[in-house]
Image (cartoon, rainbow over all chains, first blue to last red; front, side):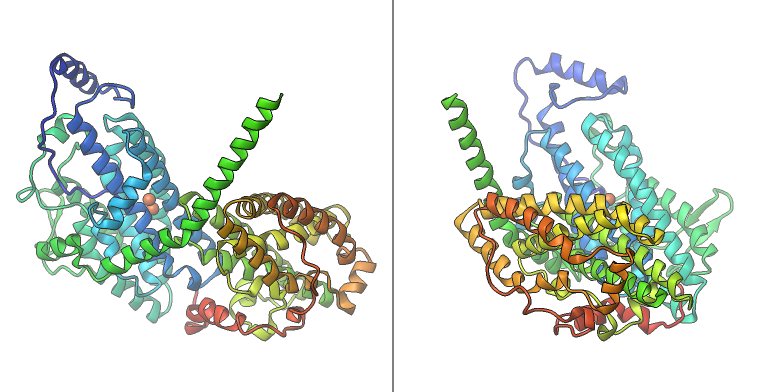
Length: 333
Length: 252
Ligand SMILES: [Fe+2]
Ligand SMILES: [Fe+2]
Protein backbone atom coordinates (compact mmCIF):
# COMPACT_ATOMS: atom_id res chain seq x y z
CA UNK A 1 0.00 0.00 0.00
CA UNK A 2 -0.57 2.63 -1.25
CA UNK A 3 -0.12 5.34 -3.73
CA UNK A 4 -2.86 7.89 -4.22
CA UNK A 5 -3.07 10.22 -7.18
CA UNK A 6 -3.03 13.70 -5.69
CA UNK A 7 -2.08 15.36 -8.94
CA UNK A 8 0.29 17.91 -7.58
CA UNK A 9 2.09 19.57 -10.45
CA UNK A 10 5.71 20.64 -10.44
CA UNK A 11 5.98 24.14 -11.85
CA UNK A 12 9.47 25.38 -11.05
CA UNK A 13 11.84 25.61 -14.00
CA UNK A 14 15.48 24.87 -13.32
CA UNK A 15 16.67 24.12 -16.83
CA UNK A 16 20.23 24.92 -17.70
CA UNK A 17 22.03 25.50 -21.03
CA UNK A 18 22.81 22.23 -22.77
CA UNK A 19 19.80 20.51 -21.22
CA UNK A 20 17.80 20.37 -24.41
CA UNK A 21 20.06 17.70 -26.00
CA UNK A 22 19.98 15.65 -22.80
CA UNK A 23 16.25 16.16 -22.54
CA UNK A 24 15.82 14.70 -26.01
CA UNK A 25 17.78 11.57 -25.04
CA UNK A 26 15.79 11.31 -21.81
CA UNK A 27 12.42 11.54 -23.58
CA UNK A 28 13.52 9.14 -26.33
CA UNK A 29 14.45 6.58 -23.66
CA UNK A 30 11.00 6.89 -22.13
CA UNK A 31 9.22 6.79 -25.50
CA UNK A 32 11.08 3.57 -26.31
CA UNK A 33 9.71 2.10 -23.01
CA UNK A 34 13.25 1.83 -21.67
CA UNK A 35 13.99 2.67 -18.05
CA UNK A 36 15.59 5.76 -16.57
CA UNK A 37 18.11 4.66 -13.93
CA UNK A 38 19.44 6.50 -10.88
CA UNK A 39 22.64 7.69 -12.56
CA UNK A 40 21.00 8.80 -15.82
CA UNK A 41 20.43 12.48 -16.49
CA UNK A 42 16.87 13.56 -15.74
CA UNK A 43 15.03 16.89 -15.57
CA UNK A 44 14.75 18.32 -12.07
CA UNK A 45 10.97 18.34 -12.30
CA UNK A 46 10.96 14.59 -13.06
CA UNK A 47 13.19 13.94 -10.07
CA UNK A 48 11.05 16.07 -7.75
CA UNK A 49 7.80 14.55 -8.99
CA UNK A 50 9.14 11.07 -8.34
CA UNK A 51 10.55 11.92 -4.91
CA UNK A 52 7.17 13.33 -3.93
CA UNK A 53 5.18 10.38 -5.27
CA UNK A 54 7.51 7.64 -4.03
CA UNK A 55 7.92 9.14 -0.56
CA UNK A 56 4.18 9.71 -0.24
CA UNK A 57 3.72 6.09 -1.18
CA UNK A 58 6.37 4.98 1.35
CA UNK A 59 4.72 7.02 4.11
CA UNK A 60 1.39 5.41 3.27
CA UNK A 61 2.87 1.93 3.70
CA UNK A 62 4.30 2.83 7.09
CA UNK A 63 1.28 4.74 8.42
CA UNK A 64 -0.87 1.92 7.03
CA UNK A 65 0.64 -0.46 9.58
CA UNK A 66 -1.29 1.27 12.36
CA UNK A 67 -4.96 0.68 11.52
CA UNK A 68 -4.43 -3.05 11.13
CA UNK A 69 -2.03 -3.13 14.07
CA UNK A 70 -5.01 -2.06 16.16
CA UNK A 71 -6.37 -5.65 15.90
CA UNK A 72 -3.10 -7.55 16.02
CA UNK A 73 -3.20 -8.38 19.71
CA UNK A 74 -6.90 -9.34 19.46
CA UNK A 75 -6.83 -11.49 16.32
CA UNK A 76 -9.41 -14.22 17.01
CA UNK A 77 -7.32 -17.29 16.08
CA UNK A 78 -3.63 -18.11 16.03
CA UNK A 79 -3.75 -18.63 12.27
CA UNK A 80 -5.23 -15.13 11.76
CA UNK A 81 -2.81 -13.64 14.27
CA UNK A 82 0.21 -14.99 12.38
CA UNK A 83 -1.23 -13.95 9.00
CA UNK A 84 -2.00 -10.41 10.16
CA UNK A 85 1.43 -9.98 11.73
CA UNK A 86 3.03 -11.19 8.50
CA UNK A 87 0.87 -8.79 6.47
CA UNK A 88 1.80 -5.78 8.56
CA UNK A 89 5.42 -6.90 8.30
CA UNK A 90 5.05 -6.94 4.51
CA UNK A 91 3.81 -3.33 4.64
CA UNK A 92 6.91 -2.34 6.61
CA UNK A 93 8.95 -4.05 3.90
CA UNK A 94 7.10 -2.08 1.22
CA UNK A 95 7.94 1.12 3.08
CA UNK A 96 11.55 0.06 3.15
CA UNK A 97 11.80 -0.72 -0.61
CA UNK A 98 10.10 2.57 -1.41
CA UNK A 99 12.31 4.69 0.84
CA UNK A 100 15.27 2.94 -0.80
CA UNK A 101 13.87 3.80 -4.26
CA UNK A 102 13.43 7.44 -3.18
CA UNK A 103 16.99 7.48 -1.84
CA UNK A 104 18.31 6.64 -5.32
CA UNK A 105 17.03 10.11 -6.26
CA UNK A 106 19.32 11.83 -3.77
CA UNK A 107 17.14 12.30 -0.68
CA UNK A 108 17.72 10.73 2.72
CA UNK A 109 15.15 8.69 4.60
CA UNK A 110 15.52 10.96 7.63
CA UNK A 111 14.54 14.01 5.56
CA UNK A 112 11.49 12.19 4.27
CA UNK A 113 10.48 11.15 7.80
CA UNK A 114 10.83 14.76 8.90
CA UNK A 115 8.49 15.86 6.08
CA UNK A 116 5.94 13.26 7.18
CA UNK A 117 6.08 14.27 10.83
CA UNK A 118 5.87 17.98 10.06
CA UNK A 119 2.75 17.37 7.98
CA UNK A 120 4.46 18.67 4.85
CA UNK A 121 4.30 15.27 3.13
CA UNK A 122 0.98 13.54 2.58
CA UNK A 123 0.00 9.90 2.83
CA UNK A 124 -3.06 8.04 1.60
CA UNK A 125 -6.29 9.45 3.09
CA UNK A 126 -7.62 5.93 3.72
CA UNK A 127 -5.46 5.44 6.81
CA UNK A 128 -7.13 8.27 8.65
CA UNK A 129 -10.20 6.16 9.35
CA UNK A 130 -10.49 4.01 12.48
CA UNK A 131 -10.60 0.18 12.51
CA UNK A 132 -13.62 -0.49 14.69
CA UNK A 133 -14.08 -4.26 14.42
CA UNK A 134 -12.24 -7.38 13.24
CA UNK A 135 -14.21 -7.21 9.97
CA UNK A 136 -12.27 -4.03 9.17
CA UNK A 137 -9.20 -6.25 8.81
CA UNK A 138 -11.02 -8.24 6.14
CA UNK A 139 -12.32 -5.14 4.39
CA UNK A 140 -8.93 -3.44 4.40
CA UNK A 141 -7.29 -6.42 2.72
CA UNK A 142 -10.10 -6.81 0.22
CA UNK A 143 -10.77 -3.14 -0.66
CA UNK A 144 -7.74 -1.14 0.38
CA UNK A 145 -5.10 -3.57 -0.83
CA UNK A 146 -7.37 -4.21 -3.82
CA UNK A 147 -7.48 -0.50 -4.71
CA UNK A 148 -3.73 -0.29 -4.16
CA UNK A 149 -3.20 -3.03 -6.74
CA UNK A 150 -5.33 -1.18 -9.32
CA UNK A 151 -3.27 1.95 -8.73
CA UNK A 152 0.06 0.21 -8.68
CA UNK A 153 -0.06 -2.39 -11.46
CA UNK A 154 0.51 0.37 -14.05
CA UNK A 155 3.42 1.62 -11.94
CA UNK A 156 5.25 -1.66 -12.53
CA UNK A 157 5.86 -0.14 -16.01
CA UNK A 158 6.81 3.30 -14.65
CA UNK A 159 9.70 4.88 -16.55
CA UNK A 160 11.86 5.14 -13.43
CA UNK A 161 13.59 1.76 -13.05
CA UNK A 162 14.05 1.58 -9.25
CA UNK A 163 10.38 2.53 -8.65
CA UNK A 164 9.07 0.12 -11.29
CA UNK A 165 11.09 -2.77 -9.83
CA UNK A 166 9.96 -1.99 -6.28
CA UNK A 167 6.35 -2.00 -7.53
CA UNK A 168 6.68 -5.45 -9.07
CA UNK A 169 7.65 -6.89 -5.71
CA UNK A 170 5.04 -4.87 -3.83
CA UNK A 171 2.18 -5.80 -6.18
CA UNK A 172 2.80 -9.53 -5.74
CA UNK A 173 2.43 -9.15 -1.99
CA UNK A 174 -0.57 -6.81 -2.25
CA UNK A 175 -2.47 -9.34 -4.31
CA UNK A 176 -1.79 -11.95 -1.65
CA UNK A 177 -3.13 -9.48 0.95
CA UNK A 178 -6.20 -8.82 -1.17
CA UNK A 179 -7.03 -12.53 -1.41
CA UNK A 180 -6.43 -13.00 2.29
CA UNK A 181 -8.73 -10.08 3.11
CA UNK A 182 -11.46 -11.44 0.86
CA UNK A 183 -11.11 -14.83 2.52
CA UNK A 184 -11.65 -13.19 5.94
CA UNK A 185 -14.81 -11.57 4.54
CA UNK A 186 -16.01 -14.88 3.10
CA UNK A 187 -15.50 -16.61 6.44
CA UNK A 188 -17.42 -13.86 8.27
CA UNK A 189 -20.25 -13.89 5.74
CA UNK A 190 -20.62 -17.66 6.10
CA UNK A 191 -20.41 -17.39 9.87
CA UNK A 192 -22.87 -16.36 12.57
CA UNK A 193 -25.42 -13.57 12.13
CA UNK A 194 -23.23 -11.33 14.31
CA UNK A 195 -20.21 -12.01 12.10
CA UNK A 196 -22.15 -11.25 8.93
CA UNK A 197 -23.47 -8.01 10.43
CA UNK A 198 -19.91 -7.08 11.34
CA UNK A 199 -18.85 -7.63 7.71
CA UNK A 200 -21.71 -5.52 6.33
CA UNK A 201 -20.98 -2.69 8.77
CA UNK A 202 -17.32 -2.68 7.78
CA UNK A 203 -18.19 -2.50 4.08
CA UNK A 204 -20.59 0.36 4.80
CA UNK A 205 -17.86 2.37 6.50
CA UNK A 206 -14.97 1.63 4.10
CA UNK A 207 -16.57 1.64 0.64
CA UNK A 208 -16.54 5.39 0.01
CA UNK A 209 -13.11 6.01 1.55
CA UNK A 210 -11.78 3.17 -0.66
CA UNK A 211 -13.15 4.90 -3.79
CA UNK A 212 -11.43 8.09 -2.69
CA UNK A 213 -8.08 6.29 -2.80
CA UNK A 214 -8.00 6.93 -6.55
CA UNK A 215 -7.85 10.68 -6.02
CA UNK A 216 -10.03 13.52 -7.37
CA UNK A 217 -12.32 13.00 -10.31
CA UNK A 218 -10.83 13.72 -13.76
CA UNK A 219 -13.07 16.74 -14.20
CA UNK A 220 -11.61 18.37 -11.08
CA UNK A 221 -8.04 17.19 -11.21
CA UNK A 222 -5.11 19.25 -12.32
CA UNK A 223 -4.21 17.24 -15.37
CA UNK A 224 -0.53 16.46 -15.23
CA UNK A 225 0.68 16.29 -18.81
CA UNK A 226 4.24 15.82 -17.55
CA UNK A 227 3.43 12.66 -15.61
CA UNK A 228 1.74 11.19 -18.65
CA UNK A 229 4.57 12.13 -21.00
CA UNK A 230 7.10 10.75 -18.50
CA UNK A 231 5.11 7.51 -18.18
CA UNK A 232 4.71 7.87 -14.44
CA UNK A 233 0.95 7.99 -14.84
CA UNK A 234 -0.68 5.89 -17.54
CA UNK A 235 -4.37 5.92 -16.62
CA UNK A 236 -6.60 8.65 -15.22
CA UNK A 237 -8.01 8.55 -11.69
CA UNK A 238 -11.53 7.85 -12.93
CA UNK A 239 -10.41 5.07 -15.27
CA UNK A 240 -8.65 3.29 -12.40
CA UNK A 241 -11.58 3.87 -10.05
CA UNK A 242 -13.98 2.39 -12.61
CA UNK A 243 -11.81 -0.71 -13.02
CA UNK A 244 -11.78 -1.16 -9.27
CA UNK A 245 -15.56 -0.83 -8.98
CA UNK A 246 -16.15 -3.24 -11.86
CA UNK A 247 -13.87 -5.82 -10.27
CA UNK A 248 -15.10 -5.37 -6.71
CA UNK A 249 -18.90 -5.07 -6.90
CA UNK A 250 -19.43 -8.65 -8.15
CA UNK A 251 -17.15 -9.89 -5.35
CA UNK A 252 -19.25 -8.07 -2.76
CA UNK A 253 -22.48 -9.44 -4.23
CA UNK A 254 -20.97 -12.93 -4.11
CA UNK A 255 -20.42 -12.38 -0.38
CA UNK A 256 -24.11 -11.55 -0.06
CA UNK A 257 -23.35 -7.99 1.03
CA UNK A 258 -24.88 -4.72 -0.14
CA UNK A 259 -23.00 -1.55 -1.07
CA UNK A 260 -23.82 1.74 0.68
CA UNK A 261 -24.63 3.47 -2.61
CA UNK A 262 -28.29 3.55 -3.72
CA UNK A 263 -27.21 4.79 -7.17
CA UNK A 264 -24.98 1.78 -7.83
CA UNK A 265 -26.26 -0.08 -10.92
CA UNK A 266 -24.92 -2.09 -13.80
CA UNK A 267 -25.08 -0.21 -17.08
CA UNK A 268 -25.95 -2.99 -19.51
CA UNK A 269 -24.77 -1.07 -22.56
CA UNK A 270 -21.25 -0.36 -21.35
CA UNK A 271 -20.91 -3.28 -18.93
CA UNK A 272 -19.69 -0.88 -16.26
CA UNK A 273 -21.06 -0.35 -12.76
CA UNK A 274 -22.22 3.23 -12.33
CA UNK A 275 -21.88 4.81 -8.91
CA UNK A 276 -23.25 7.78 -7.00
CA UNK A 277 -21.43 11.01 -6.32
CA UNK A 278 -18.36 10.81 -4.08
CA UNK A 279 -18.27 13.24 -1.14
CA UNK A 280 -15.31 15.30 -2.29
CA UNK A 281 -15.60 17.67 0.64
CA UNK A 282 -14.86 14.76 2.95
CA UNK A 283 -11.92 13.70 0.77
CA UNK A 284 -10.39 17.17 0.94
CA UNK A 285 -10.99 17.45 4.67
CA UNK A 286 -9.34 14.10 5.45
CA UNK A 287 -6.40 14.78 3.16
CA UNK A 288 -5.88 18.17 4.77
CA UNK A 289 -5.63 16.57 8.19
CA UNK A 290 -9.25 16.66 9.33
CA UNK A 291 -10.00 12.92 9.24
CA UNK A 292 -10.99 11.06 12.39
CA UNK A 293 -7.52 9.57 12.90
CA UNK A 294 -5.00 12.01 11.33
CA UNK A 295 -3.77 13.38 14.64
CA UNK A 296 -3.43 9.96 16.22
CA UNK A 297 -1.60 8.44 13.23
CA UNK A 298 1.04 11.17 13.29
CA UNK A 299 1.28 11.17 17.08
CA UNK A 300 1.92 7.41 17.05
CA UNK A 301 4.60 7.81 14.41
CA UNK A 302 6.21 10.72 16.28
CA UNK A 303 6.20 8.77 19.56
CA UNK A 304 7.88 5.83 17.80
CA UNK A 305 10.58 8.14 16.42
CA UNK A 306 11.16 9.70 19.83
CA UNK A 307 11.19 6.40 21.72
CA UNK A 308 13.69 4.89 19.30
CA UNK A 309 16.10 7.83 19.17
CA UNK A 310 18.41 6.52 21.92
CA UNK A 311 18.61 3.13 20.18
CA UNK A 312 19.62 4.66 16.86
CA UNK A 313 22.17 6.88 18.60
CA UNK A 314 23.61 3.87 20.41
CA UNK A 315 23.87 1.87 17.18
CA UNK A 316 25.72 4.77 15.50
CA UNK A 317 28.05 5.23 18.48
CA UNK A 318 28.80 1.51 18.52
CA UNK A 319 29.51 1.39 14.78
CA UNK A 320 31.84 4.37 15.14
CA UNK A 321 33.72 2.75 18.04
CA UNK A 322 34.18 -0.44 16.03
CA UNK A 323 35.33 1.53 12.98
CA UNK A 324 37.93 3.41 15.03
CA UNK A 325 39.14 0.22 16.69
CA UNK A 326 39.64 -1.24 13.22
CA UNK A 327 41.54 1.85 12.04
CA UNK A 328 43.80 1.62 15.10
CA UNK A 329 44.35 -2.10 14.49
CA UNK A 330 45.21 -1.61 10.83
CA UNK A 331 47.57 1.30 11.68
CA UNK A 332 49.38 -0.87 14.22
CA UNK A 333 50.01 -3.66 11.69
CA UNK B 1 2.66 -40.63 31.05
CA UNK B 2 0.85 -39.09 28.09
CA UNK B 3 -0.87 -36.61 30.44
CA UNK B 4 2.55 -35.47 31.68
CA UNK B 5 3.80 -35.29 28.08
CA UNK B 6 0.84 -33.13 27.11
CA UNK B 7 1.56 -30.85 30.07
CA UNK B 8 5.11 -30.40 28.78
CA UNK B 9 3.86 -29.54 25.30
CA UNK B 10 1.40 -27.01 26.78
CA UNK B 11 4.13 -25.37 28.88
CA UNK B 12 6.44 -25.07 25.86
CA UNK B 13 3.54 -23.71 23.81
CA UNK B 14 2.69 -21.18 26.52
CA UNK B 15 6.27 -19.91 26.74
CA UNK B 16 6.31 -19.44 22.96
CA UNK B 17 2.85 -17.87 22.66
CA UNK B 18 3.24 -15.41 25.52
CA UNK B 19 6.66 -14.22 24.35
CA UNK B 20 5.51 -14.15 20.71
CA UNK B 21 2.54 -12.03 21.72
CA UNK B 22 4.75 -9.66 23.69
CA UNK B 23 7.02 -9.24 20.65
CA UNK B 24 4.03 -8.62 18.38
CA UNK B 25 3.19 -5.61 20.58
CA UNK B 26 6.24 -3.92 19.04
CA UNK B 27 4.66 -3.88 15.57
CA UNK B 28 4.78 -0.30 14.16
CA UNK B 29 6.68 0.84 17.29
CA UNK B 30 10.27 -0.32 16.68
CA UNK B 31 13.26 2.06 16.58
CA UNK B 32 13.74 1.50 12.83
CA UNK B 33 11.70 -0.09 10.03
CA UNK B 34 14.34 -2.81 9.68
CA UNK B 35 13.96 -3.67 13.34
CA UNK B 36 10.16 -3.63 13.08
CA UNK B 37 10.49 -6.36 10.47
CA UNK B 38 13.04 -8.29 12.56
CA UNK B 39 10.84 -8.19 15.68
CA UNK B 40 7.91 -9.49 13.64
CA UNK B 41 10.11 -12.35 12.45
CA UNK B 42 10.95 -13.29 16.02
CA UNK B 43 7.28 -13.09 16.99
CA UNK B 44 6.21 -15.20 13.99
CA UNK B 45 8.76 -17.91 14.86
CA UNK B 46 7.41 -18.13 18.40
CA UNK B 47 3.73 -18.05 17.44
CA UNK B 48 4.50 -20.81 14.93
CA UNK B 49 6.17 -22.90 17.63
CA UNK B 50 3.21 -22.34 19.97
CA UNK B 51 0.80 -23.63 17.32
CA UNK B 52 2.87 -26.78 16.83
CA UNK B 53 3.15 -27.47 20.56
CA UNK B 54 -0.57 -26.89 21.18
CA UNK B 55 -1.49 -29.15 18.28
CA UNK B 56 0.83 -31.82 19.69
CA UNK B 57 -0.67 -31.37 23.17
CA UNK B 58 -4.17 -31.79 21.72
CA UNK B 59 -3.16 -35.04 20.04
CA UNK B 60 -1.52 -36.33 23.22
CA UNK B 61 -4.61 -35.53 25.28
CA UNK B 62 -6.96 -37.03 22.72
CA UNK B 63 -9.86 -34.86 23.87
CA UNK B 64 -10.20 -32.83 20.70
CA UNK B 65 -8.76 -29.55 21.98
CA UNK B 66 -7.43 -27.37 19.16
CA UNK B 67 -4.56 -24.87 19.19
CA UNK B 68 -7.10 -22.08 19.62
CA UNK B 69 -8.76 -23.82 22.57
CA UNK B 70 -5.42 -23.70 24.37
CA UNK B 71 -4.64 -20.12 23.38
CA UNK B 72 -8.04 -18.47 23.75
CA UNK B 73 -10.12 -20.47 26.17
CA UNK B 74 -7.87 -20.91 29.20
CA UNK B 75 -7.51 -18.31 31.96
CA UNK B 76 -4.17 -17.01 33.21
CA UNK B 77 -4.08 -19.51 36.08
CA UNK B 78 -4.10 -22.37 33.55
CA UNK B 79 -1.09 -21.00 31.64
CA UNK B 80 2.21 -22.72 32.45
CA UNK B 81 4.73 -20.24 30.96
CA UNK B 82 7.70 -18.98 32.95
CA UNK B 83 7.41 -15.49 34.47
CA UNK B 84 10.27 -14.23 32.30
CA UNK B 85 8.15 -14.23 29.13
CA UNK B 86 5.05 -12.55 30.58
CA UNK B 87 6.79 -9.46 31.95
CA UNK B 88 5.99 -6.32 29.94
CA UNK B 89 8.33 -5.43 27.07
CA UNK B 90 9.81 -2.42 28.83
CA UNK B 91 12.16 -0.46 26.59
CA UNK B 92 14.01 -1.88 23.59
CA UNK B 93 16.98 -2.86 25.80
CA UNK B 94 14.73 -4.90 28.07
CA UNK B 95 13.01 -6.58 25.12
CA UNK B 96 16.34 -7.61 23.61
CA UNK B 97 17.83 -8.69 26.93
CA UNK B 98 14.79 -10.86 27.65
CA UNK B 99 15.07 -12.39 24.18
CA UNK B 100 18.73 -13.20 24.75
CA UNK B 101 18.13 -14.73 28.20
CA UNK B 102 15.29 -16.87 26.84
CA UNK B 103 16.81 -17.88 23.50
CA UNK B 104 20.20 -18.68 25.02
CA UNK B 105 18.34 -21.29 27.05
CA UNK B 106 15.90 -22.55 24.39
CA UNK B 107 18.57 -23.00 21.76
CA UNK B 108 20.45 -25.77 23.64
CA UNK B 109 17.09 -27.07 24.94
CA UNK B 110 15.83 -27.65 21.40
CA UNK B 111 19.25 -28.91 20.24
CA UNK B 112 19.16 -31.59 22.95
CA UNK B 113 15.51 -32.40 22.18
CA UNK B 114 16.12 -32.70 18.44
CA UNK B 115 19.04 -35.02 19.03
CA UNK B 116 18.00 -37.18 21.95
CA UNK B 117 14.27 -37.01 22.63
CA UNK B 118 12.53 -40.37 22.50
CA UNK B 119 9.23 -38.79 21.42
CA UNK B 120 9.02 -38.00 17.69
CA UNK B 121 6.50 -35.18 18.26
CA UNK B 122 8.91 -33.19 20.42
CA UNK B 123 11.87 -34.11 18.23
CA UNK B 124 10.26 -32.80 15.03
CA UNK B 125 9.23 -29.47 16.49
CA UNK B 126 12.66 -29.04 18.11
CA UNK B 127 14.46 -29.72 14.82
CA UNK B 128 12.70 -26.70 13.30
CA UNK B 129 12.80 -24.51 16.41
CA UNK B 130 16.51 -24.98 17.07
CA UNK B 131 17.39 -23.07 13.89
CA UNK B 132 14.98 -20.28 14.80
CA UNK B 133 16.39 -19.94 18.29
CA UNK B 134 19.95 -19.77 16.93
CA UNK B 135 18.84 -16.70 14.99
CA UNK B 136 17.16 -15.22 18.08
CA UNK B 137 20.39 -15.62 20.07
CA UNK B 138 22.36 -13.95 17.30
CA UNK B 139 19.93 -11.08 16.74
CA UNK B 140 19.29 -10.31 20.42
CA UNK B 141 22.96 -10.87 21.25
CA UNK B 142 24.06 -8.38 18.59
CA UNK B 143 21.70 -5.77 20.03
CA UNK B 144 22.77 -6.36 23.62
CA UNK B 145 26.39 -5.88 22.51
CA UNK B 146 25.55 -2.75 20.50
CA UNK B 147 23.50 -1.21 23.30
CA UNK B 148 25.91 -2.25 26.06
CA UNK B 149 28.86 -0.79 24.18
CA UNK B 150 26.96 2.10 22.54
CA UNK B 151 26.35 5.34 24.47
CA UNK B 152 26.38 5.92 28.23
CA UNK B 153 22.57 6.08 28.15
CA UNK B 154 22.18 2.81 26.24
CA UNK B 155 24.68 1.11 28.55
CA UNK B 156 22.71 2.23 31.59
CA UNK B 157 19.44 0.94 30.12
CA UNK B 158 20.97 -2.41 29.17
CA UNK B 159 22.45 -2.83 32.64
CA UNK B 160 19.07 -1.97 34.20
CA UNK B 161 17.33 -4.50 31.92
CA UNK B 162 19.69 -7.28 32.96
CA UNK B 163 19.23 -6.47 36.64
CA UNK B 164 15.45 -6.36 36.28
CA UNK B 165 15.18 -9.68 34.42
CA UNK B 166 17.84 -11.68 36.22
CA UNK B 167 15.56 -12.78 39.11
CA UNK B 168 13.29 -14.48 36.54
CA UNK B 169 16.02 -16.56 34.88
CA UNK B 170 16.21 -19.29 37.54
CA UNK B 171 12.75 -20.55 36.64
CA UNK B 172 14.05 -21.65 33.23
CA UNK B 173 15.92 -24.45 35.07
CA UNK B 174 13.14 -25.55 37.42
CA UNK B 175 11.58 -28.99 36.93
CA UNK B 176 8.61 -30.47 38.77
CA UNK B 177 8.22 -34.18 39.55
CA UNK B 178 6.49 -34.92 36.21
CA UNK B 179 9.15 -33.22 34.12
CA UNK B 180 11.92 -34.91 36.15
CA UNK B 181 10.34 -38.29 35.39
CA UNK B 182 10.03 -37.44 31.67
CA UNK B 183 13.66 -36.34 31.60
CA UNK B 184 14.71 -39.60 33.28
CA UNK B 185 13.00 -41.57 30.50
CA UNK B 186 14.53 -39.37 27.78
CA UNK B 187 11.35 -37.66 26.53
CA UNK B 188 12.62 -34.15 27.36
CA UNK B 189 16.10 -32.81 28.28
CA UNK B 190 17.21 -32.43 31.87
CA UNK B 191 17.18 -28.65 32.28
CA UNK B 192 20.09 -28.70 34.72
CA UNK B 193 22.41 -29.91 31.95
CA UNK B 194 21.65 -26.73 29.97
CA UNK B 195 23.00 -24.35 32.57
CA UNK B 196 26.57 -24.52 31.28
CA UNK B 197 25.79 -23.75 27.61
CA UNK B 198 23.32 -21.01 28.67
CA UNK B 199 25.95 -19.38 30.85
CA UNK B 200 28.63 -19.69 28.15
CA UNK B 201 26.43 -17.82 25.64
CA UNK B 202 25.61 -15.14 28.18
CA UNK B 203 29.21 -14.66 29.25
CA UNK B 204 30.35 -14.26 25.66
CA UNK B 205 27.66 -11.66 24.84
CA UNK B 206 27.79 -9.80 28.14
CA UNK B 207 31.59 -9.71 27.95
CA UNK B 208 31.47 -8.02 24.55
CA UNK B 209 28.76 -5.68 25.79
CA UNK B 210 30.88 -4.60 28.76
CA UNK B 211 28.38 -6.00 31.25
CA UNK B 212 28.96 -8.40 34.13
CA UNK B 213 26.68 -11.35 34.88
CA UNK B 214 24.72 -10.37 38.02
CA UNK B 215 25.45 -12.40 41.14
CA UNK B 216 22.03 -11.79 42.73
CA UNK B 217 19.40 -14.46 43.39
CA UNK B 218 18.02 -15.71 40.07
CA UNK B 219 15.01 -17.41 41.63
CA UNK B 220 12.92 -14.65 43.17
CA UNK B 221 10.55 -14.27 40.18
CA UNK B 222 9.15 -17.75 39.82
CA UNK B 223 5.89 -19.70 39.94
CA UNK B 224 4.64 -19.44 36.36
CA UNK B 225 5.04 -23.17 35.78
CA UNK B 226 2.61 -23.76 38.66
CA UNK B 227 0.15 -21.18 37.33
CA UNK B 228 1.15 -18.55 39.91
CA UNK B 229 1.63 -15.61 37.57
CA UNK B 230 2.44 -11.94 38.02
CA UNK B 231 -0.30 -9.36 37.57
CA UNK B 232 0.96 -8.76 34.01
CA UNK B 233 -0.35 -11.96 32.39
CA UNK B 234 -4.10 -11.69 32.97
CA UNK B 235 -4.62 -8.30 31.24
CA UNK B 236 -2.47 -9.43 28.31
CA UNK B 237 -4.63 -12.54 27.90
CA UNK B 238 -7.88 -10.62 28.39
CA UNK B 239 -6.98 -8.41 25.45
CA UNK B 240 -5.76 -11.34 23.34
CA UNK B 241 -8.82 -13.49 24.06
CA UNK B 242 -11.50 -10.78 24.06
CA UNK B 243 -12.79 -11.18 20.50
CA UNK B 244 -12.60 -14.99 20.38
CA UNK B 245 -14.51 -15.22 23.68
CA UNK B 246 -17.15 -12.71 22.60
CA UNK B 247 -18.20 -15.15 19.85
CA UNK B 248 -17.95 -18.66 21.33
CA UNK B 249 -18.14 -21.39 18.70
CA UNK B 250 -17.57 -18.98 15.78
CA UNK B 251 -15.14 -19.78 12.98
CA UNK B 252 -12.73 -17.06 11.87
FE1 LIG C 1 1.85 -2.45 0.95
FE1 LIG D 1 -0.78 -4.72 1.55
